[in-house]
Image 1 (cartoon, rainbow, N blue to C red):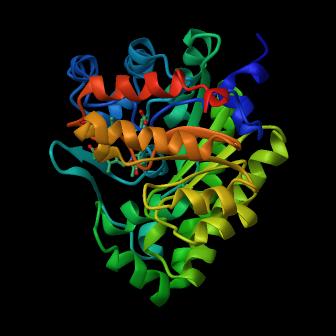
Image 2 (cartoon, rainbow, N blue to C red; image 1 turned 45 degrees about the vertical axis):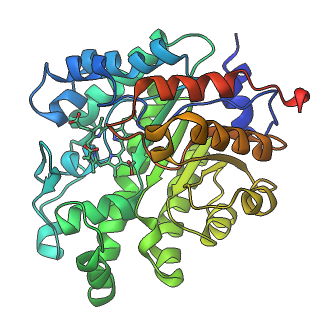
Image 3 (cartoon, protein in one colour; image 1 turned 135 degrees about the vertical axis):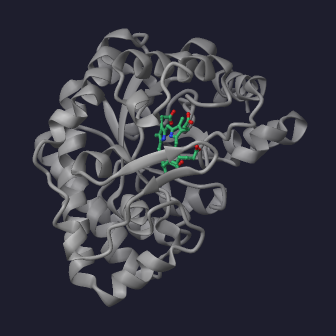
Length: 349
Ligand SMILES: Cc1c2[nH]c(c1CCC(=O)O)Cc1[nH]c(c(CCC(=O)O)c1C)Cc1[nH]c(c(CCC(=O)O)c1C)Cc1[nH]c(c(C)c1CCC(=O)O)C2
């Protein structure tokens, strides 16, 4: 079957499909016992990401269990700071810890040289997956968008308020622009290599886009996403790019218009009627079931899934969550969501 016939890719190209394709952010992960078993084989999370055998296996696990319409490469957004030479660690129960970079001196220690040697195991995983996934399943490559990666690089860890990075973006914009430029360069190259290895679409995760006022959003979210999208399109004009400026609110629309992405992933706070009117005429929409509703399950969850299906399927749409699956999610609830979406018949409404 030609890859252009895969349901997920048809939806990304702007087709209103007979039912929406479905995949879920963080579909591989700690809510699955088989993931925990494979994960136990490597102490260090980044080494786990750099082991093509293990990364391929955990990418395939949710496909075997649920038959998702797309697979997402198993890796992490922080492979980029790691490849650039920043010290990155994942501490159990605490999340990522990095040696913060807050000035030109810190930035001078990072380098693009050798990033592809460092990231070669990720490209190897993509290449194996492109041979191993089912014929009807599409393969998604991904990277963190520059602003979101910069939040970890500057703060040194996850944050609730992002006060350090937001201050530095005002007090030392020259340094901050240099850091973003380095991330635009490395992220574009990283995604181009994933595409060369067999990725059929790419998603840029800008998980912390929602903390910025409009002018800063333009400069640190829209501009970098736009530049990366255009570099991908220069090399591969038909390659679909999915943007995810999580929490962008009304700025989602400007993001879509200015970056030129083919699809936008919306978080759970975006009203469906607004997405239908303002976003779907511009591009494919992906989202936006509340991840915590899948933890709860039952009737409430089914009502939400049905509502999304009823409202969003008159235009190009990909079913997903508003943010990644959390570890406490019962796997059977995910199964129910997939079943409802895959059995949905638009003509039966
Ligand atoms: C911000 C961000 C990160 N990583 C990612 C983002 C953007 C999306 C989002 O906002 O959730 C993206 C990501 N991380 C992971 C994937 C793999 C593919 C998939 O979605 O299945 C993807 C696409 C695996 C992972 N990345 C991580 C895990 C858990 C690590 C483990 O197994 O111990 C997985 C499966 C670790 C990680 N990685 C990151 C954090 C903050 C953490 C710790 C918190 C946590 O543990 O959930 C950074």
